[in-house]
Length: 639
Image (tube, rainbow, N blue to C red; front, side):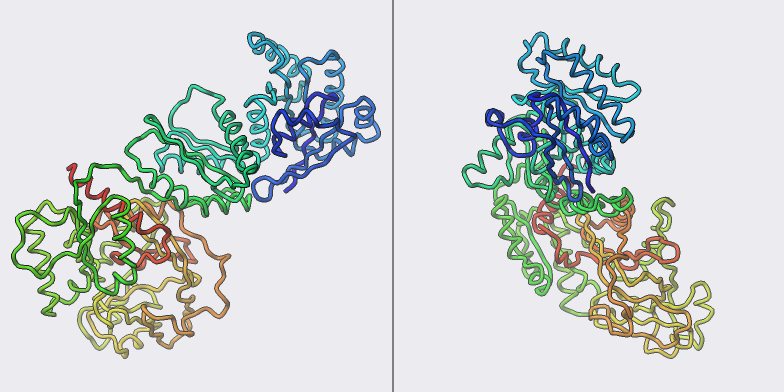
């Protein structure tokens, strides 16, 4: 996407110097050796992925200006997006400069009537400081009157201070497509981080592209000052053959983080809340990177951006005074500990906060008077799902005794809250309540029935739902049978199958073989999409069996390869609303749920929920989990 930009003005007005500082990494003193521009110098400056500034630096000598306005008129002034006209504040031919500017405006009106026009009143550093405001206002009023009916925007500039960055940031800002959408999501990011201010800089030039703030600031030139300072530091790094990556500045009043964001931008986050950890802010930046990258690279429509930038890290780590020897107790199956690489979590807790992590002692009958744990994290779903097993019963009794002995012990998540996810009927009834979410969230969970007794004909029980149907056991986990499922296209197939009551029957929803797996850790939410069961035809008849823990058989896969273009992640607001409602209804903070999109109604359907899933592939999961445990601990202790 090329945008034609004309840079015009009298000879030696400073056009090439400012272009070299902004786009070619010159420092002000080095511009003294630049020569005058001959005729038109073309340069292509890439901004933000596909946005390219096609910059025409037009020499200001009289012969060239006359040629631009006569023989080259159509060539120069056609398809112009922006005209930047530079006025030398000390020019001795001011009236002639105005006449040439007026002629350029006439050519713009004839060839590019929609072009944006900027006037830079340049070399303002040469004017005594106490006269700058009045002289600039005088020139600005003069140029605006001369330009009518065209609209012109004026800036005072100098290569020796931040004013040059302010002007060029505004010019580039006017060329960025969908910039309001970008700002909207930067506002969301700022709010989520609880930052005072977030600023987005273009990577090569360090021009300000966009910003969002939650507190007022007295210094209106702060962005440009930062641009100037960082650009100089940037150049110093280059001279020492070092690459600038990131910077953190901290004092008693604030912390500022500058970090590489997308391939074309840097981001600066300003925080004044001393209770928010640096790690949480940096983690927020990391999580948001890929989502902003998609939008900036594609320069796509706002609707696409909303789908792309749906997930930020909704986590905030509050600092707290932890007692010496603060201890996290844990219990999970051996296989889960191995899959999660739990030893890495244990090491992180010690390295970051000097927190000890030890297994919950379920063997001793003589519990000490003082609880050995400050907080415990556990998963007892397998043990709870099979209470007939003696070992399981013993384990549950042990943890219940510990919780009874130490009633103030903080759990992540409470044992009693884990029980509803074990029974698909209880869980389905809870998920059915999600249908009561406001209509704008567009949620409709699949209809279901429970068959408790074996009968000669199930038609009466199935009359409220449509085929095809999915058949599952009532028990959600803890046995091989709980993962066995089938799709039936008529009642006889179900009746003649190996499935016996009690069983859960759900309507099958066609969803283009795409399932969205949503992982939740408190306020953190992340989504991945994976291939799923194919769309079913109503004229099919043969039952389809599968194991939900194993790769899908070919009979359940779509004929065509997995099509990434069909991925449409449900809106972030919808996923957050679902997550919050589940947390409210179940009292859980560690869970995952599966969402599909009905190809007919476009509504989101929640088809499964699991407590404390694997979280495989979630970036920085150990840090997220550790911070969440500490946040839960603090909140419980405050109440």
